[in-house]
Image (cartoon, rainbow, N blue to C red):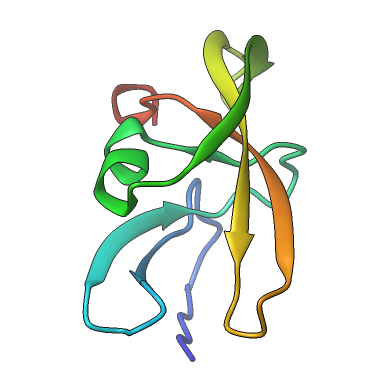
Length: 101
């Protein structure tokens, strides 16, 4: 559990997150921007590549990000199989946001 305390109002909350495969041998650390008002999940193309995410059902979408800017991004559906062999589909938008943050 991560606990962060701020003494004043902050513009952004960014925390490190660790992501691993089922064997926990390949652990990658990324920095996550927490957007509590977001209606979409956006990840970078680097994370897609690093984790070799299986992507299905591609389309291009316009998304308004937190600073009000509208960007074009690729939307995919990924299928995640957990250790109980149950599938879960997640809709992800893929875009490079670092320069926009």
